[in-house]
Image (tube, rainbow, N blue to C red):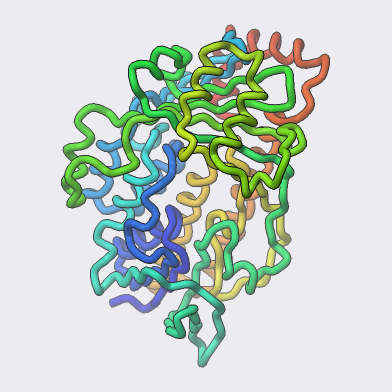
Length: 427
């Protein structure tokens, strides 16, 4: 019988993965999610799952859900490519270079964020597992050795451990570690998706059939492109989740994400208030000298599918005194999207914290000691990932200057040498 009662605030990727793992380990867990219903968040794009993220999911998911995850991923996940704005190849690295292509578990994957949410929710909506929707966390307090979470609707919940898995704007973090607020990087991404029609396919760089492509022009900006297309036969496995093989908003598409410092875009009004058509016009002005195929792809973005995001990042926080309150994912180490590893670090957090809480539940160590071990490791790999993502963003959106020609030459040399390509794949 479980000795611990764990409260998880936030039902995103990290929080739900933790809940799945704790349930699998026989630890009592309850999740409190601000979304009104399980289908309120059926939006979002393709997510890259790294070998580390895959390993974490395998550790936390029961075998039947791992099978569904494994069979409903996307095609085209072998590697990534860098090109010029004229689609001239600079670097092409694949998972053959890091030796993960044939690994059954620890390999690179492309997944739909929507499908992954369905998988992570599966089996957690029973009364025993207690996933509560429409619960907006307000604050917590200590009461008689227990933690009491208070919600906006006036309700409360009690537990032995409280985990803030509530994202970059985490209310748990704001109360627990108010000095750990993420900072604005000054970078904005304008992006959207284009349905993967025959016309769109004809415009895509050929390397997009292997994985993401990043266009690097001489200017201080970059364009990220990636295809989402489910592997053949994957729809059949969705029926194991009670779905009919098709999820709205989850059709095949290509994502475009144009990133730069806000002043680069020359916004004529507050970008947060601009409509899709206005944002598309901004993109048009920035790609007028680019390859015709890239210009046409921008034109194909549906105005209603264009969105803008201001990029924030966490700064390293000194070790704090461990208690029975802790944090995971973006709540403590939010990072830029330029390495595509944020979700994977959250999954790594979830698997490690699950293992440590499992040890405490079995009486192998004290709860606070178990959480302290998790936090010490999480700060190391988490903030290393934050720094790596920040460096990638700065390379992509910083002033390139006259040295950019040398950079392109260096990338082409790397492209020709397998050992250097391996370093690019694992950097």
